[in-house]
Image (cartoon, rainbow, N blue to C red; front, side, top):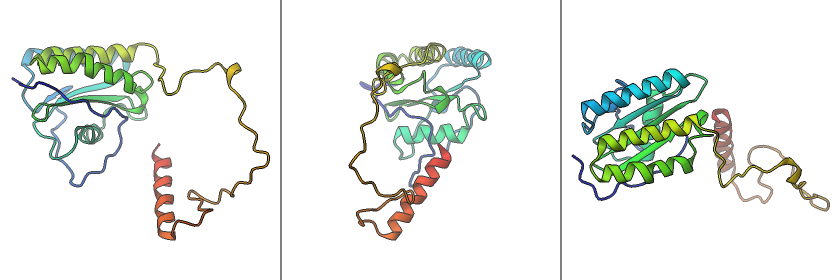
Length: 220
């Protein structure tokens, strides 16, 4: 059993190809519950796996629960993103995968969701699930209850209405103010992805920034 006074909060983000100093090794995607750390009993594993299979059949969204005995020197959000990418969670063209990752030896838990689910499984929603459901139950050694409750919360969020984030509230069009006038302002020309009107970037830096910007646009 896990004896932890506290499970740490983690970053909540869309899947990204996270760069690490050393490429970690991953457990195989052997089912909808991959218990590499061996902390989920068989009954709970079967029940959660059945829930996730039924949910995937009904909605098309693929959710996987994973436990790992080691994060191999990475922080949990980096490992979770890399694991989700390695497993290629979600349907091709849908970007609709999510992962609940528990690292008991590190006392950490993470939820990550791909872009197709982020209108419902927002940062605020995932943080609430971690703080209100997962951490209290995992810290009390209720592994089955934590995993089952966390998955129930995730599925509930994904079948509910889209969430509005505090950082980008919906505003009726009639209330949107027009952009400020640019009269009297002179702007440099948009000559590329790195516009160095102040002349402070050397050519190598400009080239590097241009490549980063181009690669990001191509991916996102």
